[in-house]
Image (tube, rainbow, N blue to C red; front, side, top):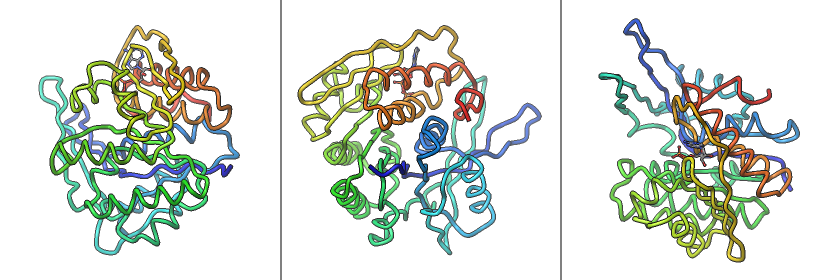
Length: 302
Ligand code: ADP
């Protein structure tokens, strides 16, 4: 099996407020979080690449340097002449965070626009990871091309993992979101939803219903996360439930699911042991949510 982990999606510029009223620039995104933690969790014999599109301007170059500085390979990132990266601003009002986005023209929306280039960027993968946000930002024709490229990669030996990460605001409408996510599940070895999202947008009564729905859509394995409640790992023939370690002091739940996915997949790719993989995922996520921010440097071995 190829020892190359590819995460596909959008990394954005984040402007976060500081105590003195200015904004601090960073880089963020759900699939980036997973790539970042996967790099920390996987052995050195694995390459971890981020696959996206950026511009050729200064801020895009800064993003590439950030990714490289995190140990991620950037050679599969397209650089476009006439676009740049998306941006969001975090605003605080009475302690509550709200987000303003500038991403409709982001280069990442074009990551699947050239089928030959896309196929090349997914070539020789051991595992390809993407999310519902990856799908949501693509034009509809490119979504179909992306799923086709995943089928080709899979036929060539890659495993495919997907977190539906349901964000209706990013989609043209909720029915399209549900249909696209269901279709995507059909090309996946691992579908890794969070029950809270599935309850809100598919009206699933229980996490078992979510697992059954994605198995029926064609997923080989479904891993349903549910905050402090049991993680369900289901295949057509088998279903197991695992209680995550309790966490007493939750500070910031950003990237709980993203970090879980990274540690779960890293363990599974190396050992194939489901119980150990859930343990690794829950352990990392449990530590991430006891710290502020998405990318917590001190938690994982370098
Ligand atoms: P997301 O942030 O994507 O909504 P979840 O809330 O489902 O993800 O959490 C992902 C994982 O993080 C859970 O499976 C669990 O391992 C861990 N986790 C999240 N919240 C808690 C909590 N309150 N106590 C213990 N573990 C938690």
